[in-house]
Image 1 (cartoon, helix red, strand yellow):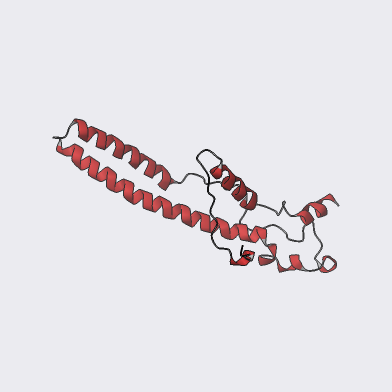
Image 2: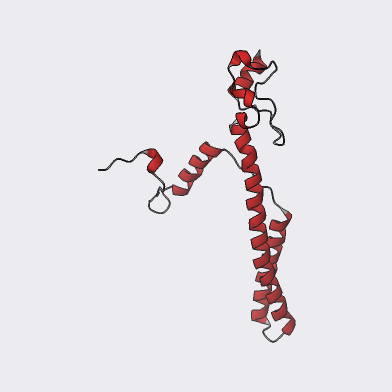
Length: 153
C-alpha cells in the first residue's frame, strides 16, 4: 500500500451505515479542533424565517382557493422574498464568520497582534500577560497557559 505524507492529503471521506455516528464524530472533531461557534440570530435570518412561513401558508392557501388572484400574487411575492432573504442571510452569516475568524486567528496567534509575545521570557515587558488583551474580541487571552501562570504569580 502506498504511503502519503500528511501535507499531500487533501480529501478525507467518512463512510458508514446509517445511524453509526458519522455526524457526531465529525462534530466532535470540529469541536475539538476549533471550539464552540456561536451564531447569534440576525435580522436577516429572522426575516428569512418569516418569509418561509408566509410562503408555506401562501402555497397551501392557493391549493384551497385556486381562483383568488390575490392569493397567487401573495404566493409569488412570498416565494421571491424567501429566495432574496435566503441569499442575503447566507451572505450576512458568511461575512460575520469571516470577521470572527480573523479575530480568532489573532487569539490563536498572539504574535499577529503583539509581536513581543514571541520574545524570550527575559525580554518580555512586565505585566500580568505577555500577550495582553486582544482588542476587539472581548477576551484577555485567558486560554493562554502563560497568561494563567502570570496571573497566579
